[in-house]
Image 1: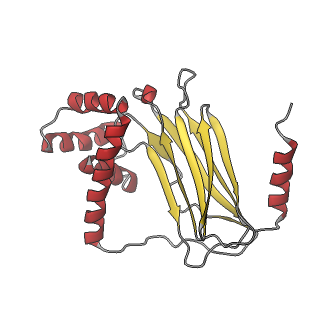
Image 2: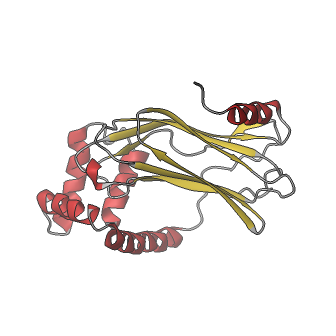
Image 3: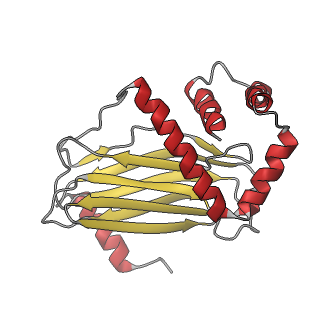
Length: 229
């Protein structure tokens, strides 16, 4: 699992080196050969773990811990600076804009975690937006998403279940009396029904709106009015 994670990172960080599906599969096959596994054995294992997610998550967490040890040995590398501007609106998303959920991927999830040196202003509102393609009608609650904000001793959470293609948004409004120390969350594939499908997520943004800005007032008004008839 650790080597699969590393292979996925190589593909995402060096797309010109692995531009085709055949070249990406060849990279995965080198991992299988290293561990004396066949691709069929790996696929069968993933299907089984899809039906036993509690066991999968225990092993997955061990793999993440092993990866962290390797990353710590490299040193503290921060390729991006978390923006902390006090502008009325700002896109905080510093990660990749495109993700692919696939049976070949051991980590069908998007994880984000922003911890600015200078906390975001109190009462800020955050809107996480993205698009998803590839869901089918037979999938039951296939994608689960969480958006969280940490304000001192308070954690605010918004959860969303995505069951259709198209654009999606999550809106989180924080407490006006506390600054925001951290904004984080994840989007993950939630069901084993997607074992033979590919799902694409793109167009990511995480907008921060300053307390009292017209954008927050407009969003509050829309939500107070309720869904359109």
